[in-house]
Length: 303
View 1: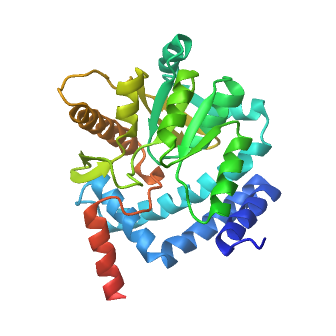
View 2: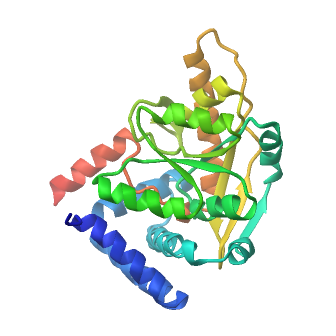
């Protein structure tokens, strides 16, 4: 069967970034993503808007342009690191990870409840997943977007399976699979700063109303598994992982939905804290607020 152009592009990128020495891969990625920052106006606009949300509307234009460029370069590094991970030894993976607060995962894993790790699209989370599966020997389940076309999703899923993760596509059956993973004592990784399905809970996120996924809160209330926020930041080589204290999970309201909404707002505040530590490593490049869609429409009309 003929491979679609998008999947072929990612496969070619994977081969290119894995087949050349690391310094050459870094140069290639920086060049490619600097070009992307100049030639993809919609993505650039969204990166700008996200940086302004985090840093405030008073940010200097020169500084904003610099951080936009660094964000695109960071995203290029994300792909270099990710594609090269399967070729690294366990010793290299372990040497590339600094971690703070990982003991916060030990209690629930020993208790057999599993843990719900909520992350933003920040830095290099796959490296942390690889370290947990190959270094710490923890079972990891990751819920990922079921991207189109199917061949592209399978490419991403197979790549992450190479890193030892159990991959669950986002969809109607995801909740059941995740609950089984938690019962089996897995670390469940949920990227939680974007409501892909559009049916999440309304929250305040960086001072603007939007929706974020309700899944982490609902799963925690139903299973007793803790919600543990985590950020994975690039350092010169490898990543630094920061595991925050668990979000308190308890029933307070008469309706489950009200508790889910409250906990989802608490998660939003935790994600803000993690993102503010390195906003130029926040790789979210899709519209995430209603005003993003309006801004994109204005950009299209201007062009």
